Image (cartoon, rainbow, N blue to C red; front, side, top):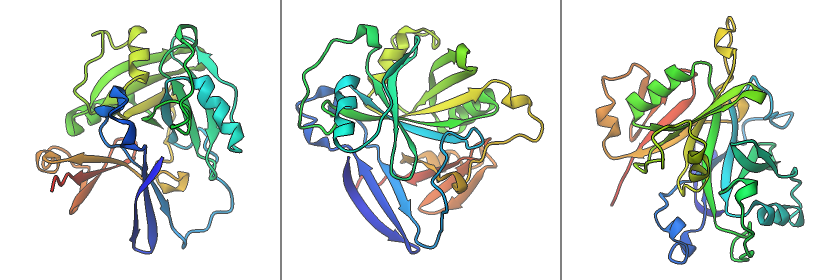
Length: 276
């Protein structure tokens, strides 16, 4: 990733990182990629005694994922950089992936474009830190009522549900929402054939994980505020701030942006897109 911008806001330091676009002409997959950034916030006034326990089920925020063309190449690059990483594994009919942690203990997932059994070995390209073109694939949060959450993101924010993936042996279902007008190769969002298409998208997706039974837990909730280290999603829009007014009672206006709370309490920051 490349540091695109560094801002000081209210004594906090905001760092905006994204993948270098210098290879877009050589790689058509990257040429149409919308700009997606990871924002890191350093607050010197806050003290933390322990690293974030990202695997804890009480935390709603789970991980970010990066998509790579060849996971074996990417996986081999990390130990050489001093980054411990677990062995790649194929989640049946879902994805070929692996996990590692950043210095604060946040989980990062690498997802290969194709299932393990469908992969053709590629030659590493040393122009990329992970050996092949890399995209910001998705961010994952857990939700208690998936239908309520999907309705919120579709009706109020204009996202589209493009894939539903049931992982029965682990007791959860995954829902993937997109801001892009790109259409899946199949109208059946549960079709397995959509999944490799999904991991090859050059833009970021929102992944909602529903752990079965959480919707029935009395007084149950996910920790969705900054105690888990997660701050907000961010969306850029030219017209959304106007169109959403009056359609939801979740909005708190804060020009030049507004913050919307989703049904689980996650913050979605809508920022005005300035093309000047």
